[in-house]
Length: 336
Length: 115
Image 1 (cartoon, rainbow over the protein chains, first blue to last red):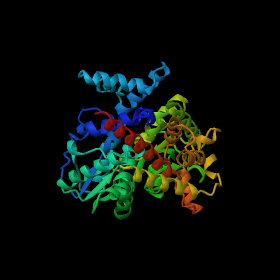
Image 2: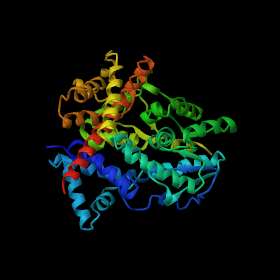
Image 3: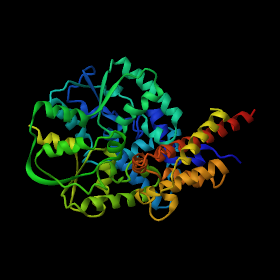
Image 4: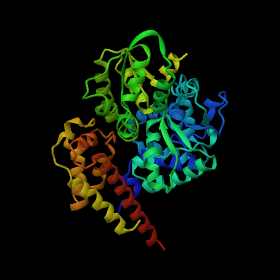
């Protein structure tokens, strides 16, 4: 008896792959991605194109879905069964994922404001940014990490054509995983890939130095920084976020010891692991948050939607008196 | 994807595993390590090697080990600094690709058999 894909690959990953290929979105929600940008008057053509990515745009749905899945698995339903049921509903025309996602989506969603902050920071620093709105594709990196290399390669070539058709030359990414995917993996599958991909933090550090702007927070606060794996070891940006934090007046940075931060930072267990091993992910998260709490900081700063989701969830579970906030949001508040 | 391409991928993976010095520094530092060797980088690499080279262990168990990796690359950073050239995180990713390709190849063949 030979085994099919379903027996060997975790259903969660197959489900995410199908979502990306069919609906061009990680969460599989057909609702518009670009709602957050409707009041911002972002042009489609500009010197820099902002790549918002599924992470922040759909994280509120993912968060709700993960919670629903976890409670389903506690009731004795495996991930496979849950996905199976939602597929069966899909066949008769009921978008169960969409409905559960909308019901379970958190009302005070902390993720989309990060996107607005990112645009506002870039504008405050005098950059000309555009955004592809509905036309922005999903970069497809979850497929790469799940092992679906062929699907990812095909998806990347399709995306490159989309970027070319809009005359995109310079991309600014916000989600670390997507930025790494666009910068490091796309060139492997596309001949003559010529997009210049930068992460928001790189651009911000350069501009802060050039313009000499001094950001300032209203209240003095002690923060610690959690390095997202994708940012510190894939994109290799460990000094930039710390430079930004140190440049903000009123912020005291309490860093972990060098074995636990920067390029040695421990993973928080967010992201792909949650889709296949939710309990292990939670234990990994608890270990990381305990490390972070030892610094005595009252705010955990990070810069990745998956990390923020995981850290928020775990700090709530541990009843810890800390806030999790995105670096871009903090910077936006401190820039006049 | 043909059999020979799959064999090529398998060789690339096992070659990478061979480069491991077995210093076991990656065991304690793996964020998912909780006492079981197979929940650490070195354990995963060993399982990959045993499965691909000698056909030991089941695909389900290997899949469980591979997909419990967070691909955070903490181990890879250690390898890079020790200049081992083993790239464990990338090897685990390649092994995932191997599982997918193998299953897809089997699926194609099953499909062909049905007239």
